[in-house]
Length: 378
Image 1 (cartoon, one colour):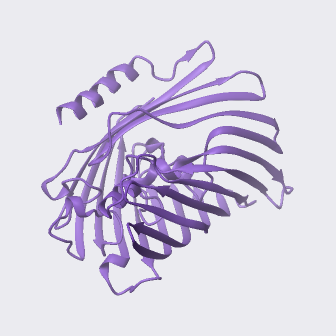
Image 2: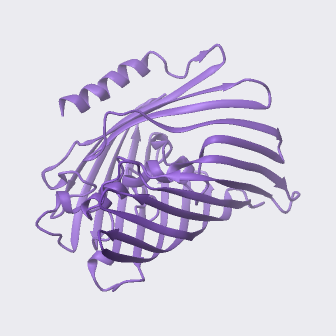
């Protein structure tokens, strides 16, 4: 606890002297947050949340420089502690060069954010969201670092469709993804008996196409991503052949009102080999959410969402193969830099967010949870 709070206070003091400075053209932005979880029955996201836990500190700083009118370079450094996940090591969330030829075409290369659904490439910016936890069926907090970006390149642009047609925004990418060595997937594999000196990795490619409709505030789109992973541990291997993730979505924002929804399907045929034993891990994940919010005052916003996950490849009557989460949330902005959030979760099923290491006595099928967070952004 002292180390986490010291980190939080240190970053607040340091960033308080910077805000959003322009140092010879270099733009510096960042955030630091401190979260709290208290849950009934089950410990969540590797935290000792049934006793109330402050094991959730997150901070990042990004640096970008427009070298020319068309070329921009940037990097984001990130450190987090989420229960047993994360640690003191500084990670590179993304680092890329971006050359924009014109509005119709541009390209990026480096460690590039992955276009997938509504929020995947923005989920590292806590300050823009009402929610403490984005819908975990689609944006799992314990694997955010892996999902956020890939090593490779991306092309992007927009195509105007006239006054009555709106415009199309497109993104296409290819590269390689590497599991976060301190993230949730690697932790779960360790609980299955596989510890990797080098985290599993694999090729990925895909794209995103979204239509900004002539109806102001309406966006409709879809993403498709192909992903493969493989890795070798001291006692076995993990193999996930190329799988196709599809994710249609829509959102509408008008004045103080916001509503959105997304559906994601992830079929996979993973295989664990531990010594002579071969263990198939069939997956056919069907995930979706609907959310809505309203800005009651200039400083206060409230909303709710429902998040649904089920693994259709297994017995869907078992709590371990589904997760249903009803959420109510509120946010208050103290000023332009400090904000606070509070959120209630009513969880049914144990398919997401739970780990054997912090629930050695097993799991109850239902749990309620209170989450709170304070944040500073500059």
